[in-house]
Image (cartoon, rainbow, N blue to C red; front, top):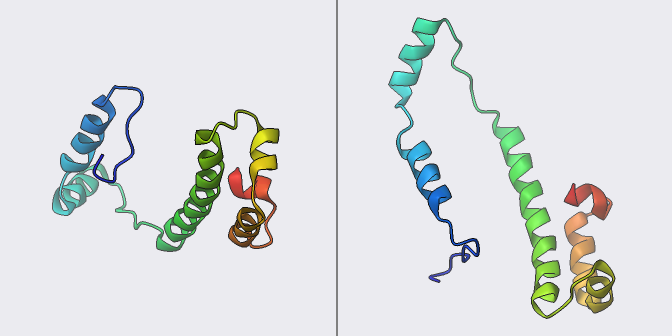
Length: 107
């Protein structure tokens, strides 16, 4: 697997589409020319917002990784996952949430 998650659906067309979207994007100069022709304003990427969303996603993934490990071990329901959580995992989830309710972090 080379460190990559295995695509269990067997359909890898999504990766081709993603690569096409990224690699076929117009250059910055082309984008600016198109914006000038269309009268649009070249928008800046809101760094702070992007950074916030990335950190939020990392927190969500850290928690889901803990849950997924228990699902791989055979837990099939939320009560089974909750009862399988170790004290260390609960502490880790609490640290990731940093005072924010778990439901809010995962939503």
